Length: 115
Image (cartoon, rainbow, N blue to C red; front, side):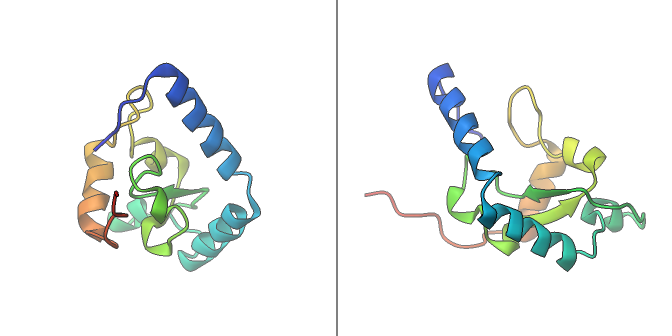
């Protein structure tokens, strides 16, 4: 599921993603998702816990499905602790918890065709 990039490409991708998170489109969408989820962590909620959400998470990571980066179906509100459990920060791959959310939402829309 994770793509492997050479260091220059990985650095460029990180820069592009950081710039994305500063856009007004992302900031608006983030607020919409937090309100939709009533500012509650959706992972904690699955286990009957009530925790304030502080982060909006891409279920399908942007480096895998950039076409879904602003799709509401691909976004969930999480607390910081649960967000850290979604992907391995060293390998940038989804953890088993992150993969469970991918399976839970299923295929959102077909991937973009490559020509």
